[in-house]
Length: 213
Length: 213
Image (tube, rainbow over all chains, first blue to last red; front, side, top):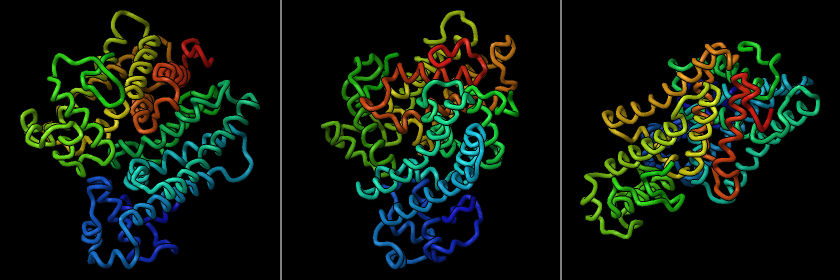
């Protein structure tokens, strides 16, 4: 679960895909967009936060929207990689749903600043770019829905339809980005486990809801 | 469940507490803050959307932050009134939790534009005003936690601790404001019932989870 965007949330290893100056700009953009919103942030402010000249931004990005798009691309790719890794290999649907919730929830806690920009500034993207990001978002949803359907078919889950459970599960994880305060709220992995317990109860799989059942 | 802010979401009856011009400004502000964010919106833009002169804004509000604060005050008061009304009278904790979830969720769907501003622009308030709004938010939480504790004590709920269920329940309702699309997603009341079913399952009260159990 490594994040290719070096966010302000934490120290992370250098990514092989983004050069150092570009990563610094992305981290600065996440901070600025998160504090004042995309539309209120200028490329000059992003450059200043990154300790660069405004012209320096244009070496790496064509526009402010370009910066936002890169934040979105890297963030979504990172979250998806975390979920995909958690779901690798064969396992029962109730185990896979637990892993999905743990990975998805803890990713949003761990990367709450980047996640906030990623979740709340989608409409600032151009139509074409929005569609590209929406495509990635659809992959999360399909992955989750598949596991829910499998668990309904196997009898592991007692819900009769995938909706609104699928929506509720994604929503719970995403909203973590809004309220999460590191050092005050439970650690990301602990929160992930607690939410996975609640979700398995919600789905009617009490054996899987270990810590609370 | 009437909303004293006449939001762009729907036609609502005139409030007795806000004069017509002021309500028009608040509705315009909700639209503008929702589309571009609080910091990127000028009082001039709010005035233009409301069909007024920039000076007209200052007849009703001292500053842009004053407008935001009023949006927050009225929105939180409206949501709290909806929840309070739903919980009025004696009822078992599992019934009260169902009513809480239905009222809280459907309020966020019905008033999704106002709710989005209310949930995502809190940090734009001055410390003092933020504290006032936080105080109202604390009342929701206390109301819910009280019902959860009562249901644990009565044996209606099989969770052993109020957290993280309380957090998850509030989070589910609040996040509706982010994704809700009227006419595409389930109607507010239907969504409220579906979420209440899921929450009661989550709490281990399967008898109360009528439509899905």
